[in-house]
Image 1 (cartoon, rainbow, N blue to C red):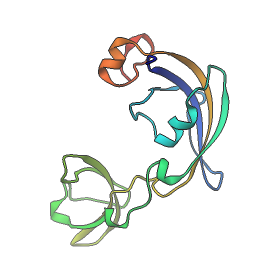
Image 2: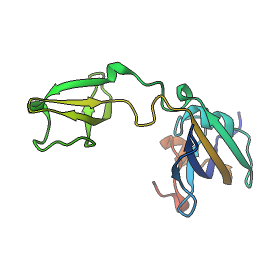
Image 3: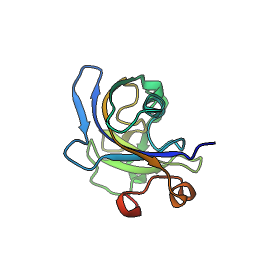
Image 4: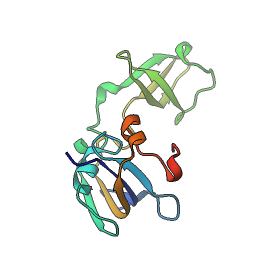
Length: 158
């Protein structure tokens, strides 16, 4: 089997309406190790085989991006259970989902006694559009393969 590649790329991310959400242009390119799930599956699948200098527009359905929106991930909790008292809408916390995974939840509603949090990724349920430009493709190093992720320039972790 061929050695997995490390792909470095710039991207502009837009939602289905064409509103720009993020862009790496003018900053460091993003790098990922193929096949380990470092980037969303729908994007990695469509970038497979691209070479340095390639540009591509990639549409990714919600299910292959950050997943469908799940109503059951919106939970009302007693205010007393939260780590801090002055909670406002938009605050984010790391919460133990009970199955050994820690997820980020966003506060969506606050009352005197309860706080409603949403465990969905902010982009869950959204179809996404990426404009990508491949900056570099190289074979992964032994360290990267051992660690299961790409290292930055000079072998440093991001």
